[in-house]
Image (cartoon, rainbow, N blue to C red):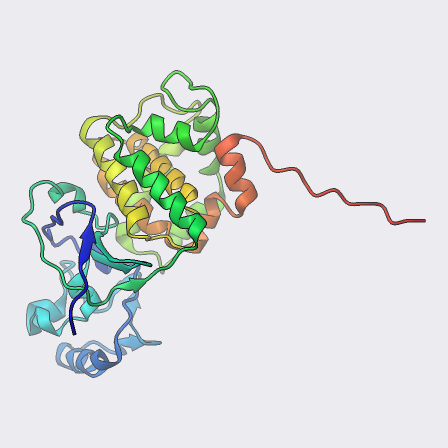
Length: 319
């Protein structure tokens, strides 16, 4: 069967640095023809109960096949070809849209920032592509947001001002947005999610500095990502939209939450920026984590504008 053409925003560059983070907090779905191979691998490696509900079992938030050095035991002892296809493919993300197959490097990879300019280009095949189709309105919104992100003068302040109405404050953000965003971190559900045993260790390490820093955001810091950090934040936002990594949320909400996550990662300090942003865009794929910040469209509207939509008027019954 002829392979479809694969489209990408830019050359696919990535080198795996062996951090093990991709094996945390994600239960890998197995294709039917992989089940027997993984079960046999588990017997060879002494791993009990390797598959739960069709997915590779997690133990304390990480893959049951990881060793003490965060390396895949299947890869190390049996060869990379024995790994599940999703594991072999990651962090390459593939999505089949209405008209094309798109490819990119998942920005949730904890070391993607370190090699996005320098790694050799990767050739990919269109196997394992997720299906994602949008209605006409969502397609137009996605295209408009990608145009904004590709504009020569695109910046975090310009994008956030496009997403959130209002005059700019001292650093160029819409007035009140910094304070509203800082207040969202006060939800105790965030700390509870990070403490959950099923939360991957790498995600916990990435988000905890953002949460800890938020305790001193009164008033919020005044600096924003600049230079290479800002370029990476915009690139992450492009990838989140282009690869439709959050297909169940409106594009404007995805862009806003991604960029605000980059601001939070910057506020946590330079050492935490790249891993914090990677953990952030991974965490947003968990509905419970997303809801801890914006539980419904009313909260999203308040975050973006400072206003809530008017409540529906309740008419009094006729006497």
